[in-house]
Amino acid sequence: MSDVSLLEFSRGSKASMILWVLSKRLKFLGSGELKEIIVAKVKMKALAATARPIDAVELLEFFGLEQVQSEWRLWRERLSKLGRAFKDDLELDRFLLTFFREEVMQRDGYQCFSCGRSLSPLMVSLHHIFWDEGILYNVPSNLVTLCVECHGKIGCGEAI
Image (cartoon, rainbow, N blue to C red; front, side, top):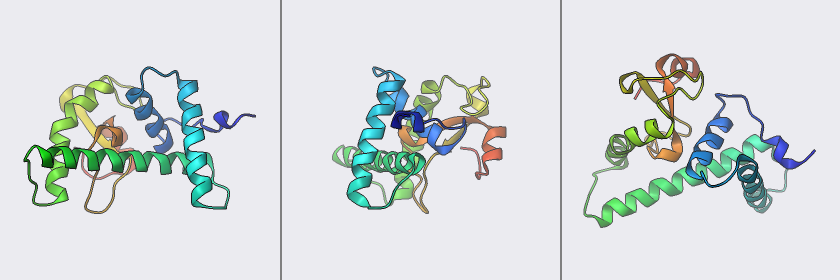
């Protein structure tokens, strides 16, 4: 059994959402190649970070969170260089959500990631794969499109 086969996740899981977003951001790669790259990168980071065994889901979440935080910091720096000042990270997150909302819905084809239902822009709910108290990381690599019903099943708060 190859390590790549470890990256089979149930639809709607955090790990499957991370793979979905990564595959959309890297359209030029096939899914097999993408999985191999992810496995190689996260194994290397995991070995450097700890001596204990780490499962595929934990590795993928580590890699995904690192990517999300990096993308968020990049946008904060870009906007700062353009002279756009924010009083705090929450204000920046609100701006980024407005800025990227349409892009995320288009990327996901106005379909619910979980059930696959087609959605109108008014029926879309965006789900954060990762969030931290006070910072939601409103960047495309951390957002997936869900219908209101599926978002409610995941146990999240308000639809955004």
